Image (cartoon, rainbow, N blue to C red; front, side, top):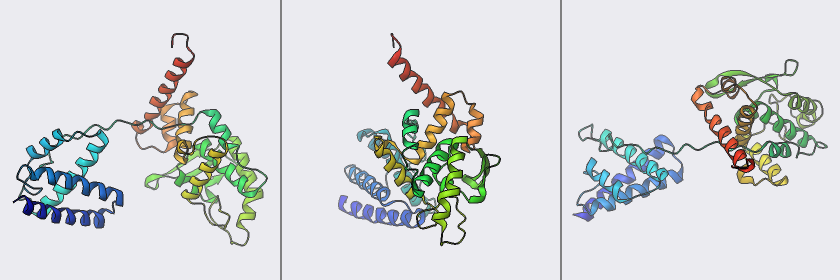
Length: 302
């Protein structure tokens, strides 16, 4: 009986994995994790004389209780089970109750965004060689990223027409196609103007009139991967571990340092393009953690 159930379970798991791959386009690693979670559940259910198609809420609760894992692994496991049983219920036309409907979801610990120290940001930004066109471009991009807190996609997608140097602002199209105006710091603006005057014409030469503000050595728009690579390279050059640095870390650093210097949370929300203030409030926790470390390090009774 157990072998027959295991065979049925294997068929159900194969059908589920094929369905979520074709319909949801999940990553290969996620699909492998889902398959592993479901196969482990199937083997455990077999010891109780049932299978995936006949398991009830009590069976799943007992399984979770007997298989302790980290909160993150539990969340992934429950995601696999919910998807699997939701699909099974649809295939059966709702004839059978979904045993995951009342399962309590684990509370995921809220990770704090990682920010670089101001001295690290300064070292990173001044790393490019201003004697070359690519160095001028990289300096302008790093200055702008930190000055305005852009998402990396917003940075590389910036059109030349999105910059108003006279007013010192950018028009950025963010998530959901929403436009916002962002001020550009004087230092960043000076390096952008140098790039536009000296470097961009050389990069654009022979490539018509490219629309992108920042160009690759081939004269086309930069990509996220290109910017990611150059950020990592300059981080290693100035002694910052590459794993601590990414384009998004520059955005986190922009937000954290503004709050540390007294910026208003609502204003920061507008600059970052967050639709909800709750998303921006995470940076207040980052600032508080920084103050705690400062106190512990320097206070005589810290």
